[in-house]
Image (cartoon, rainbow, N blue to C red; front, side):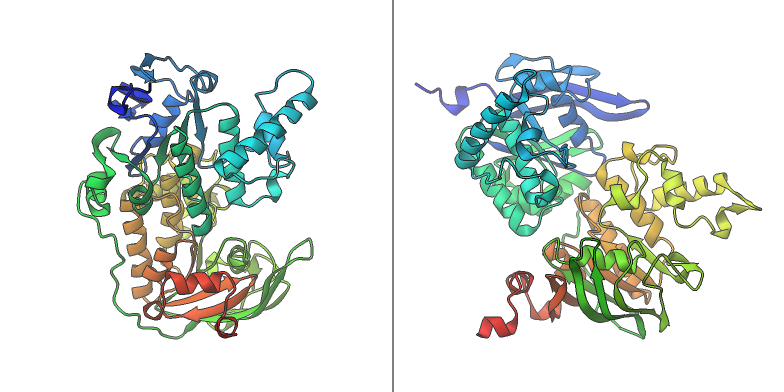
Length: 518
């Protein structure tokens, strides 16, 4: 006879967990209890200590003090292998997959049955098929990982943990790289896992997700656990205030746009990649001073290539790009001997770790990238490192980067604070044209409010902004005009006040007015 839930020990109980990195106290005497068979959310600002706490639970870090209890038993976890033996699996924000391996090869990596791989692969293929059917994780075991969508790659990560017989799953910002439809599918999978008795810890900045899928939510602030509440007894506004310590504006507050002269004029732009695939299909649009043009669309429909061409990262095949009526070279990074930044273009790329930062380099070095020739950074023929560090210190204070240490390598900041470094570098100079891709991906609610205000402030200062985001509420809240991309082309344009998520979703799926009427 099964014991009632109230009589069962918690799946996880952390008692008095503390962890410091030098002078930075990442976790301070944290205690938390997670009931079996529940989805438990953990929220907090960037740098609040959420990922550190979960990394201790998964054995990546060793706590300076405290105890870990699993299913009522004191369980030392010195490394990730011990965590796996304890039935704990972790799906990281940035996937730990070998991209040129197959799904089944990734799943057995580190869990082989012996020196002969073929029996392990055959066994894993059978088990994966069973798991995929049981939990709705439809993935071809023999597919190459790099050929899968991001959503399917995440399924591989979940399957990898289930193959290792994990009963406790930790998901760190699982929807940060997913489209809305992929996120919905993930939550259906999590509900199925919960029904089967799995325990899930969900770390996310998205309060709507917390409200929709969790049973209980814990709030962290500055390394401490400040509250644990039943999700049904709280609200997004209440959680935001617990996270930040003040009331937070959850909706974008902006005055009507006052568009001026055309800043960016894109004419018949076409991009064909190295494999001969047409990624951008002869699109044209304009952005005026003092307005934000939002580009909506499911990832992979040409938005990334559009941003990369405008930012000078890849060449266009044909077409024209005019900035203030003057052409920009579409074949490379430079036009008329000047870089894009020297022409007044700022660029917050979609992937901060690949395109926005050099991860082993320190924050002050990353703040200078692309602006090496700024007179403020020069001392005769040499770089003035002291001036760069001082400028970085000021930017960190203005943009609330935590910890505010210019000498810390970029890889040692949380994902949200990495984003703040990129945003500070590109927005602080008030460029005439700001290209911004996924500005708040993996960023906490307080920082989202701040970044949105900075974007609006640029617009109100007469700057032009091109915004690419998979978050439809962000597109609707920030944009003055919205263009939707599907299969490399613009499938429709809308004014925010004349549309909604359902209407935009149809355009994102390629259903145009003509098709809808047919």
